[in-house]
Image (cartoon, rainbow, N blue to C red):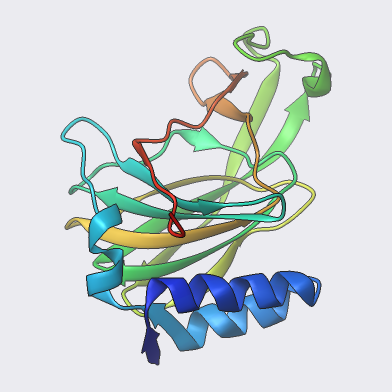
Length: 195
């Protein structure tokens, strides 16, 4: 594994962007490279209430975030609105639970931001569980649909998330009421790595 300054890391991602941002090339790069801890330090922020999404870089093709997790913090069950995504765990380990949508009685494309589907309209079943350890990289989101929950496996964790085609909204699923709502991913802090 080669460590590099965050600016060099982002510049290499921009080169991959110019080459078409092919899934396997991006995964290979993330598997073999990691930003130095020192260059990630300004983006390393935790929240006592929930995991923290710290935006490092964003353009029209991709966004890069550093997610900081205290023990047992996790995302809600959510999708990525058709985007592609990769994760590299920097510290600790992450638990990833994938779901399949087995029934939908509502056209989800018609649900506006802040609106919810009726109870019982979206049924999910668990497909599998993975644990991703420090130093590992995977493609965690594939089009057309990925529904999952991500969280710190046992201890806290720090992970680098790369998403192609930044999104403004996604669906958040309620496994109890079998419904979903369209919401905005919350960003804990925003930075410009090239400021």
